[in-house]
Amino acid sequence: MRPILELLPEELPGEGYRRAQIAHWLYARGALDFAEMTDLPKGMREALSKEWRISEFALVEAYPSRDGSVKYLFTLLDGKKTEAVYMPYPNRKTVCLSSMVGCPAGCTFCATGALGFGRNLTAAEILAQILAIAHHQGISPREIRNVVLMGMGEPLLNLGNVLKAIRTMLHPKGLAMSPRRITLSTVGIPKGIYRLAEEDLGVRLALSLHAPDDETRRKIIPTAQRYPVAEILEAVRHYYAKTKRRVTFEYTLLKGLNDHPWQARLLAKLLKGLSAHVNLIPFNPWEGAPVVGTPKAGILAFAEELKRLGVPTSIRWSRGRDVGAACGQLALKTPTSLTFTPLLEDAGR
Ligand code: SF4
Image 1: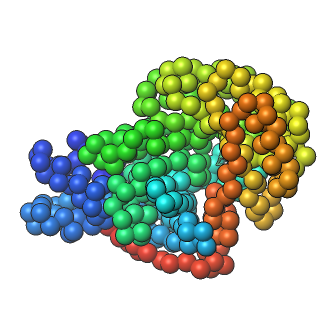
Image 2: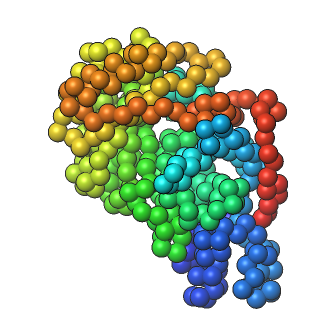
Image 3: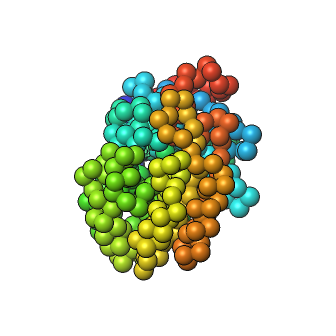
């Protein structure tokens, strides 16, 4: 069976208005089974379910957090696992999606990096995360208005599939999202940033900088050996010039590594002239992590120093800490060590 979510809405099977009906069932109604598409002729529904599948997961496990967010662990059809997080806010519903199983980047502070690289996710597997979350939450997929590609994986190393998924997210007959509500987070792959700028989709870029100097960065982000900060920032400047979208700089504070006042000052200097926002992220510890997070007082001091130097800064206190919301944490554990709700077993296959 072929994955129907690989198709753009205009490529869906059937004639014009049948295509629109299928797209509506998938992305507005959140159908995970062709049998639900009751305004299609029975013969067509049967033919569709013989040829196509909607769900990309053998199993979906949900781990609700006390703060209202829900972490999802997806078992893909080949048995590999990936994750996503649902974060409801009073005025919006956000999902954090994965683009890979594991990650080849190997950042030392990241639980996903410790897993190593499994494989790239297909466009269908990226979109299926939204559909499965909406189904579990009992909402339309179109009610999810914010997407951050910040889960497992480096999206710019799987850019073809990520772009394909984003096109369906943006498509008026797909998830009809605003490009400003989609954020792609990268550890800094200049070639990928240039390509994303050329695609001109208008999505937001978040750069996981984590250190303003190459020496520190190389200690915590292996890809920094290949891409110096100056080269990455040049690509980011190009992205900003092309898209006029403010770039977010992600910065996980690690004790004694990247939390010195001189690093705050260097960061402020680097960001001069760039429309940028710094998101300071308290480290979310995981078992076996080789680094330690900066204590709260240090985080506040680092933020103050940046603000004093005129850098728009916020602290992103992590959600879902009680269920291991830092990406990769669930896959590192055995699910039985946490409460879980099996769902959609064999759905739509
Ligand atoms: S921080 Fe991002 S790029 Fe680095 S290992 Fe984790 S998932 Fe990969």
